Length: 443
Image (cartoon, rainbow, N blue to C red; front, side, top):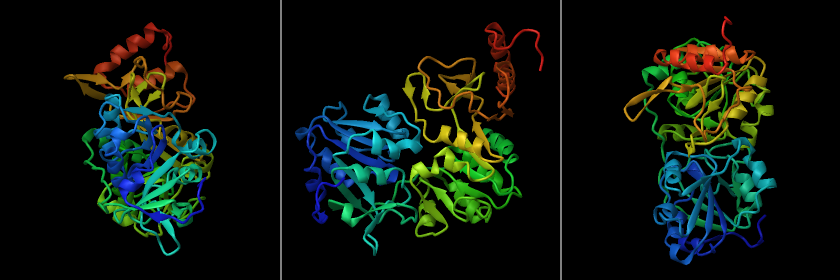
């Protein structure tokens, strides 16, 4: 929705920031594509501006517009999915969540959101055809570009050039170009799996067959599954995932990922964003085995289902006795977001032979006390990410249960069986008291 036919001009970051007016809606895009030099230049103008609203997602490093405006007198931050940094800003009342299934975001921009005043995205320098590649973060950037009144790119040599459908913006669509600082892309630490992670991963890995198509979420447990698969005899795996992780890269390098049985994009590792190590980014650079697609392609259940034996692996923080999964908030404190969890749960179920796994440690520590992640009921304000009707496998270090086709009573019994032993009696007492389990019924 570019409003000018003039060719793109190269300007400085302060000149770009000077284009922002009070009351505007800006968009910083997602993770590695969020601008840095522009952000600092905009923050330097704070005293001249009020009520500037910025949409973003998965912020990988501190943002100057937030750090320099702690009271929110000038800039307001709206976020589609929280990183650890975004969560801290939310705790300070400086970040507000935008609820969505992540794969629907392009449609939101095209149908429900007023045109963005200015979109500012970090990109690779232009290629020989005049395209500025988004690197390993496609997501909904094309939809924003199409709808934005003004398009600014901040070019950097710090991003890998990644192949994929619509993974970039052409020179003819750009209003202004600014030179970035060319810093390396931020990395996401990948700590070694704990014993609990490995105990959960062993159970999931045993359910993965030759030719399965993987979706692996963020976190220690999903990556531990990748580690366990390296030790197994499984072969010819495919990948159609939202997030690309170092764990998947290790499977690829070991020759376990061929993608030859995929119905969609055979032979290709398909994803919509990658966050991980420098090694991951280097491996993606101009590698034709990897393709970065818009999120409405990777995450749509009616796309996911076309691949056979899809295996979806995602973390959660809490599950109740009926199988409701809460992955994004603890009470009224927002933690992350719905992300792609629900869409991949549904896509995996619809896939021939597909399986979805929700995994969690049975307990956590708070204020020096051990508490159960399997609960009779959620705390007030807790958001349900995956309804009980969609859940298939739930896995803790104490076991794996499939809730499909089970009554409320059977679900309660199954969930109690994989809770930490110290909490099972209390959970059963609550289930009996509130008639989740009828007295005298045995299964």
